[in-house]
Image (tube, rainbow, N blue to C red; front, side, top):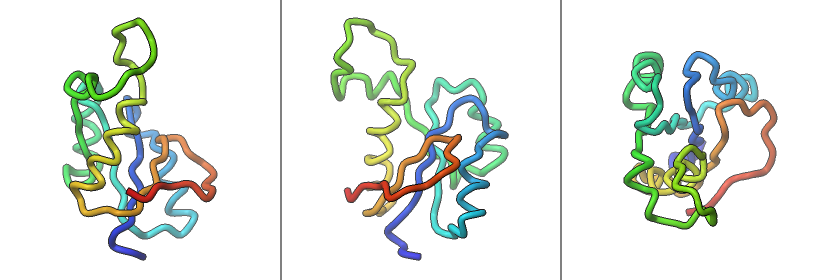
Length: 116
């Protein structure tokens, strides 16, 4: 497995139901993976306890909200759009060049990913 590739899983509120990890393992994936959660997740401590702080990437949606326009008139931050964008930033910080971003309930994997 390449050392510059990783899977980042977008998580929120269900640390004990991260189906994607089980399905990655069943698919034979043995590479790097991380779970990205926002500081607004009420169960962030459970993620850290279950997976360790070396696997959990944390970001603050309120800090990132100014980085792009959601194209709506509301000021709501309940959206995964920030996590998708922050995933690339976090990957760069970790030295990851090739990235696959998945939701925490992914069960089928296709040819998706990004070069950053």
